[in-house]
Amino acid sequence: MKHFISVNDLQTTDVLDILDLAEHYRKYDHLKTQKQLFAANLFFEPSTRTKMSFIVAQRKLGIESLDFHSETSSMKKGESLYDTAKTFEAIGSDILVIRHEFDDWPEEICSSLNIPVINAGAGKKEHPTQCMLDLHTIYQEFGHFNKLNIVIAGDIKHSRVARSNAQTLRRMGANVYFCAAPTFMDKTLDFPYISMDEAVGICDVMMLLRIQHERHDQFASVENYHQAFGLTLDREKRMKKSAIILHPAPINRGVEIASELIECERSRIFQQMSNGVLIRMAIITKLLKERGLNDENFIEKRKTVVAAR
Image (tube, rainbow, N blue to C red; front, side, top):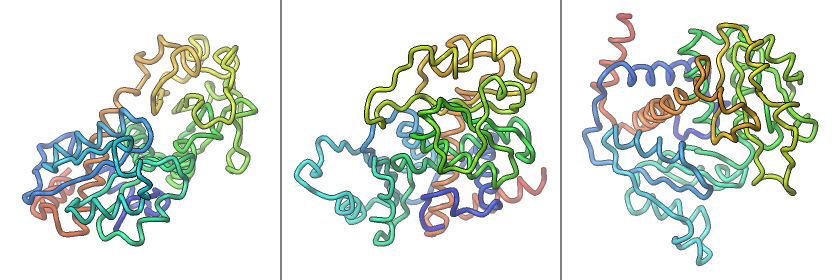
């Protein structure tokens, strides 16, 4: 695994190995890298959870984070994304974490870079590390994916999270359904659409998405959205006792979800955020292992611990 660009590039065994390593980081003290390493975080879109969890993950692994602000960078002088990435490679970064508004930016730069690149968000196309932390949260809860009913509800058309999660969850054996207002449907994705009232009755996992106004050509009205398409207090009462609620955040309270449900007993929203650090630590570790830059003794120790379970 030279780069981490798409979960579609991974075999199911690779997915499970990353989940296993993330769970190890949750349960056991980790060992930091023995060499001085640098990670550059190139974020060209606003981010709180993704960017900060990458920085925390890097520091927990003993990696120094190189911050970057596009508004004060040479890109204001016309420098391309490719040249910016090559600059960080040239000055000594060992890994790049990139989020950009263009769908296909990885295709432009990854083939010409000699250091690992992690996709932290590509336009409306993919968000693979979010997908992995969502899978980790589901796996922690149920111990498997097979035949679980996963409902992804919200702005499907403009969501990279929906695309990454739906395809990967189906591959892992889950039954995936979409729920969306007509203007937020994406018929290019081959998944069945059901109403929110149907969804709450069958789901094991309710994964809610916000309306992504910044990706719309014109402002989308949220009037009456909550009652028609949101997870209301009444709908939550009709969910299975064992069903859980996920949301990649940021959350629009009272729109896609009732504010009272964000920290309710079945919500795993803040657990997802915690898992984001663990998953990103695991992905960084695997990429560095490919380059021979991490602690091989730690990897062997992890296998021994897992085998003993």
